[in-house]
Structures are given as structure tokens and as C-alpha cells.
Length: 104
Image 1 (cartoon, helix red, strand yellow):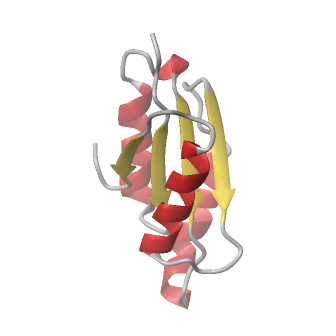
Image 2: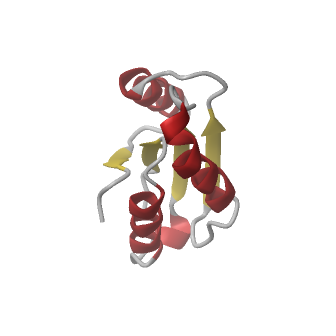
């Protein structure tokens, strides 16, 4: 059975992002699923607190087949961050699942 990878784009909503990851890790088949996370770079100072928490947190995530983390060096904005991740993952996989960072 093919397990499509899950794609998540995020920036600074740490609590919502953490809750999403916890929810996904508890799903049947998560250990067979690759996770792709694109963390956009903050465009203003107000985003850095949540951004820094996410940067630290992603290094502790377990429960998935493999975790791919893309840390942007400049601010892409939500649309470009998402499109870039989707395009790069489609180069490797035939199907994807995209999820907003505030879903559970």
C-alpha cells in the first residue's frame, strides 16, 4: 500500500503546529508516512518567537517514516512557500497530502 507524503507549510503558529503534528503522529500508518515541513522565514519581528519555537520543535518530531524539513533563508510568503514545496515533492512522489498548520 502506498502512503502519500504529508506536506505542511508553517511560519510561527507554534501551538497549532504542535497540535497538528501530535494528531498526525497518532494516526494509523503514520510510521509509514513521510512528512515534509516547509518553514517560511519571518517577514517581521513579531513572528520570531513562534518561528524559533517551531525551529526547535521540528528536531524532536518522531512517529513518521521520514521527516524532511525545509527552512527558508528568506521570506517566501505563504503562496510561494506552498508552491515550492508542492513542486519539489511532486518531483519525488506521485501523490501528496497537503495540510494547513492549524488543522487537527
